[in-house]
Length: 337
Image 1 (cartoon, rainbow, N blue to C red):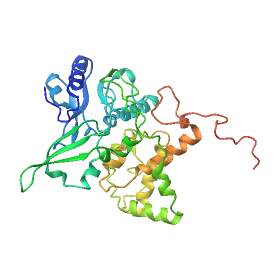
Image 2 (image 1 turned 90 degrees about the horizontal axis):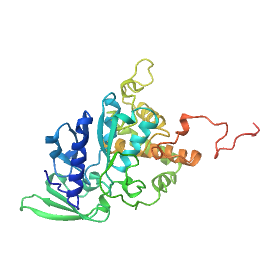
Image 3 (image 1 turned 180 degrees about the horizontal axis):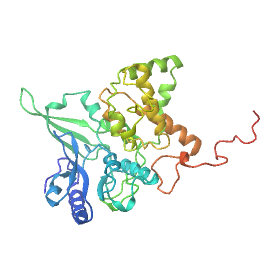
Image 4 (image 1 turned 135 degrees about the horizontal axis):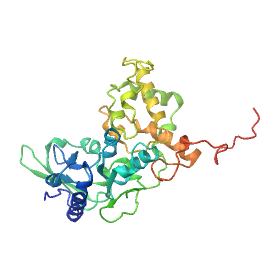
């Protein structure tokens, strides 16, 4: 079997994962999992169709992709999928909206201690020089040991992993999958701080004009590649997206600030009460635009008004999918207009 380069007691977990997937291969068309990418710091989605493919599987701190993104486009098949805790929230939301059938999905859940944000690492070094990488200890408080190649020969550099974790990991309250058929490895206690929306508070301290200027600068860099939309597991109407539609013609193909902004606002509104903050939209943006802020603003409002978080409770009804005469937190009956 292939060894896992991020060996933190993960060898037995990988053996268990491969064993469980092998047991289910006869019951599914294929299994979506993670494999090593084009360098030691990147993972890539892989499909496991037979036992030979099991050797390609990995699971470590580089497995940042949300594999639930591929599910809606594969409806009609019976699939297996490997998920982290945050990924499982997207699956819960898809099931709630009846966008996937539970009986056609075999979920392999792996408790997760965090994934690396390569943008943070890239800001301090040339990651192209990395020839080997290994996490020593837990991603929450361990070291990323890198073997670098250079003109002077190979050298080793250690970096604390906590400073490299994705922002969502620092506030994660669901490190364990919320829905699964096979749980691989022991559950992990949440260690992320309760989300206080500090990133939004910092933005809202700015004046109205300063916030307007901030978003103009950000949206001005958008190239309308739609990577944010395509990477989103809940953007399921890509084939009839209003950004591409010419009948009705909501948006033009012009690369004006107004058109870019309208698309991003529309994107955020269509995800109101649905976004699980997996962060794939922002991670996939080639221009580094902090578009997750827009979704987090919507999520904060949904939490305050309806006490609801997307993808947390499979039995819950999303607040925008139902109607009540009076909401618990919105007292509007009897008001004089």
